[in-house]
Image (cartoon, rainbow over all chains, first blue to last red; front, side):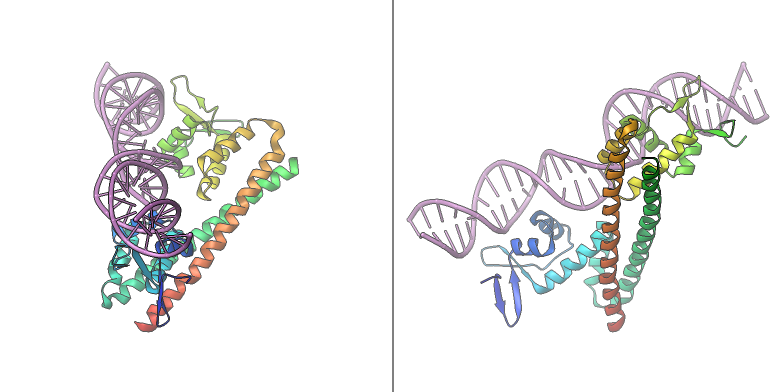
Length: 127
Length: 127
DNA sequence: CTGTTACCTGGAGCGCACTCCAGGTCAAGG
DNA sequence: CCTTGACCTGGAGTGCGCTCCAGGTAACAG
């Protein structure tokens, strides 16, 4: 079988599979769990991790937040919020704030890219 | 006077002024000089740095490259190229390559932002 | 001349986000 | 049963890009 297990449309994934699917390293996966970004990961009787579809979804969000430059500390705050059901407003606030930061990053990159292209054009002109 | 000196439309700037104008810290300015990203900075008889307009322009490029995620090592390569006159083609190649990386960064951020907005919308729906 | 502020140097230290390691365990294939 | 490879743990180490520090000097205001 391709995956570590399957019941009722739900799948279980080995650490290796998760690493491949998420693009995170095994070490990073363990690291995230250690610091509390990811908890409740199931284990086989022998002690090996078995990630669920839910874990995979959560890792997708974590990856999204990291790749867009959210510091781990902030991600921990978000993870903390997600442990409590009635924090939806706070979660939205946190994500909106981050979205703003992402918009700013994009704007900054676009502005600097203009600078960069200007420099390239200059070199092309004198080259 | 506002600036550290002025002859013939060219200005000289104190470290403090440069820090303010470029947004780089004094320590970073010294660090860049130490590692060879910036050389030939003038000194007063007493040993204080006097940055020229040329230095400011160069620092602008350095800042552009850093803010768009170029590693220091690569910036050193670029600085090295800029010490030799007949490397225009190489400089263009390096900058084009970096521009590509910037485009990819922007695309990635935009894609992740879509993910992020989706999550926010989901929270708004259930909130 | 004196005080204050900005600047100088070499070198150590820091925060972040992993990444690697040693020494061991589990589980599937043959 | 034995081998092999993926996985386990706690803890140490790494690379990057600064940032801070101590002890000292320059320059300018009053």
